[in-house]
Length: 455
Ligand code: F0G
Image (cartoon, rainbow, N blue to C red; front, side, top):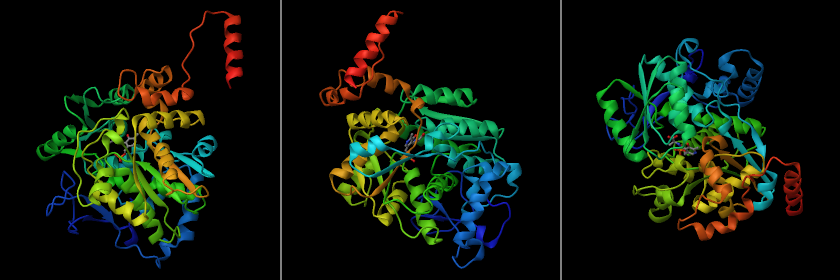
């Protein structure tokens, strides 16, 4: 979506399996020939084009940081040369100034894991507190340009929160399908407040997706799940912004959580495109971590060499990634292989411990994001990540998205009465339960002194 259309900015869509290049996508964003997913490609990109001179692009993007224009202030649209073109951006672009997220050093986590250079890019610092906003600004703008009245998604909570906000900002109506009783209150409260029509279906996330796919075939509703390739394009910018923050010197490893596998696909796509355009000279290894109870991609790679994916009934307290039939698994497999990354699975207790450790570094995140640190520990133990290598974790959601999980963990209730209770004993040292005291100075001083002795 460049402000002016040039040969370089022309984007086309292509099927990831049969290579068909239709002129436009249908309502379900599936290839009409073979049914697989679509992706954007940019036939006009050549590294000898002056508009794509790496030095020119880097300085253009940096200069936009001081601009007063909404488009430039967005950490997504700032990189619009690498995004699909949409005419009249002033009319159609819906932006909440997404992106622009911080990259933090994680010194305590680094020591605990045994790596020298550990950083976290916190995508939970987006306007609706998850990484979804970077893709949503692009896809919602495309819905606006298409003149849609309704947009819709199936969600584990973050996509729906983001979609509801962007739809409201763009004067569109939004329909949310979420699994009843399986998403956090924080996320549900967002879609209600932003005015979505919120339907809690008595099924899981995968069941919500099935209904949505049927719905878009019957109603003029614009689909905003990550099968929508505009979402993937917007989510690429997290990786572009990360490279800029690292002065275009790629880290050795990037680690992402894997749910529906749109985010890993997007970050991988951005890395490959940046290398193609000579913005970076080498590829980081992109590794994908799943919760053990929602690990169809892990099993696909480890058991079937990526040849097939067997859907499963997913179950994890990290509700954001409670997904048994990930739509973008083939795209994710491609970038995993192209970058030489690894796939891992982590237990519920490992996720909870990692989340508390990220919190103790003063950062915090939601449970699904913490699989990255838990996975890094395993990748260190297996030797895939070496102590001298640099690692960036992608934290996908904010701590306050799921306070129930956090409070239960610190009170020691999270695993009470479950099969994980015995393993969870190892996390006691990470728990900081609140202390209820009388309103008495002596009692507070005694608590302070006891904490000092134990610190
Ligand atoms: N982390 C968080 C916080 C998420 O909300 C999600 C996905 C993921 C990681 C996984 O990303 O699906 O691209 O592999 N949440 C979606 C939703 C499914 O509906 O909010 P993915």
